[in-house]
Length: 108
Image 1 (cartoon, one colour):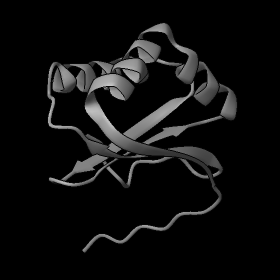
Image 2 (cartoon, rainbow, N blue to C red; image 1 turned 90 degrees about the vertical axis):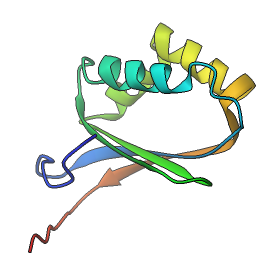
Image 3 (cartoon, rainbow, N blue to C red; image 1 turned 30 degrees about the vertical axis):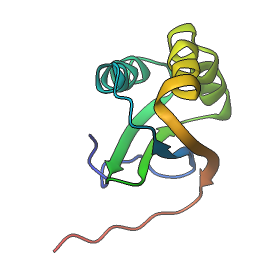
């Protein structure tokens, strides 16, 4: 979902969403794809990376400001997805907001 080497120069912010899913998939994939599409249209959005195995999912979204993160959290469609996540899709999740102050890349 994202090229991990195509970020702007720091500082910027990362929202790390780590989750454990329930067995229910009722519309999850469709909603997840819709949220990435919608987030990418928000002011301040810089990119997203995501990975999931049978036990753990991690999605990291990148933003240019804390205000942009707050606006995304409060977006009406995102709030609907958050509620469905709590009631249907997630056993548990953790959200961490971090300021990225430096970065380095390696490509072979």
